Image 1 (cartoon, rainbow, N blue to C red):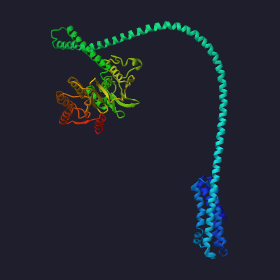
Image 2 (cartoon, rainbow, N blue to C red):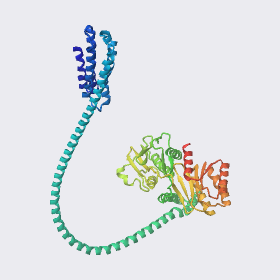
Image 3 (spheres, rainbow, N blue to C red):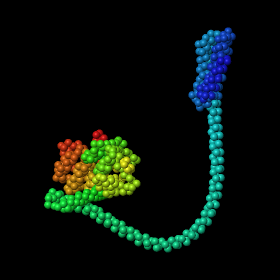
Image 4 (cartoon, one colour):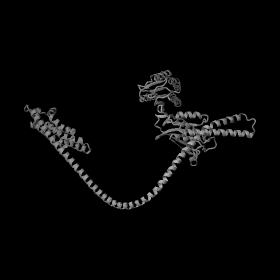
Length: 595
């Protein structure tokens, strides 16, 4: 008995350590298990005293044990409720089996009557089931009532809290309303005073306004005249700049030719005359360089460079280093890292010019005390790509020269040749793209230039040429050029637009071409022959490999499409015809991705 009672400490310990499910199951399972164990022990110890009642009393106790789970477990904990009730139910159903297995069965010890199994089990199990169902029904009703009581209590508590909150809020609002009422009364008094002052000032302003209106009209007229004059002056200045950069080239070329001829025969000239010839030659060459520089600046400011293409930094750097190979000494170390941002969509000549000017400056102004180390790398910064060029050269005193470092013809070292144009062009070119350039430098330490290229997103539909009858576009992402016909064209328009298309292929070496012929109209046989014998062979020599043509099914140009297809196949170019421009673009995209 003492040992059995120790088992009842286990549920208490488990419950203390938060194992509530196992603790409650043991609390419900231990009583029926203990009753059966004690009954078996009693029959083994005193077999001669066993009577029928000794096999029935244990069943009554098991029927009573079913009450324990209903007291310990809630009706909504179905799994745990079934697990706890099943212990007493299984023991009651298989009690005789357990007794027989342990050698203390009824027929082993009593053996009176032959209706024992039926009478003992039927009535007990029936009573068990009936009582269990009644208790479950009562338990569900009580749990439901308890749950409803809890909900009601919770609802009442929340309602009380809301009422209390609303009561406090109403009290606070009353206080605020009282304050606001006092403030409104005070403000009303102030407004009455202010209105009186406003009426007085309004009368004064009306007088002033009549005078200002007359003056404003006069100023506006003066401003319009000034703007017209500025526009006129800007146009005249632009024409003057073009005259300087273009019209003077002929006379200057003749002057340079004459000085070259004079230098070939200097035998009859005296010393001062020879010196004068040299000065004239030098002045002519300097004037030629100034005019060329001015021409570059005019081209940039008038947006000649506007088409963005896909440019690889490594390819442009290699080309620049080849052009500067004669100036790069063996001890020069150049480290390039373009892994973070290997490409940029920009104007190729501008990137090439920027790299050339920054690298040539680093070579030109290297320190004589150490080998030149040049570091070039790119990084992705927000919505831009940063090109960084660093050297360990002479450096500059930025406190002294920061404002003029990017000025035209500004030089900060006089020991070597230079015009002071390179950094001016770098700033002018990158700003024409919408970017910027920054510099950091220390005297006798080195210089770092950070050139920020805007991360251009609209590179797929760049319009190169626009007219009423057709337009030429360029897609930098796929390196594809194309033409969209807008209306029926005459021979002159047809040949002019295709000539411009050929210039596009020559300039950008585009391997892909897309032509939208759906609104082109009818093309004469002479123009067809001219296109397939002149334009297509030249374009293919420049690198054209695939052509996509778009037409609509009712278009009467079968002969034109047939001639273009036959010529393309003969020249080894892949060509496809589509009735939907989107499908044509997808075909080119697939070709680019499969490369």
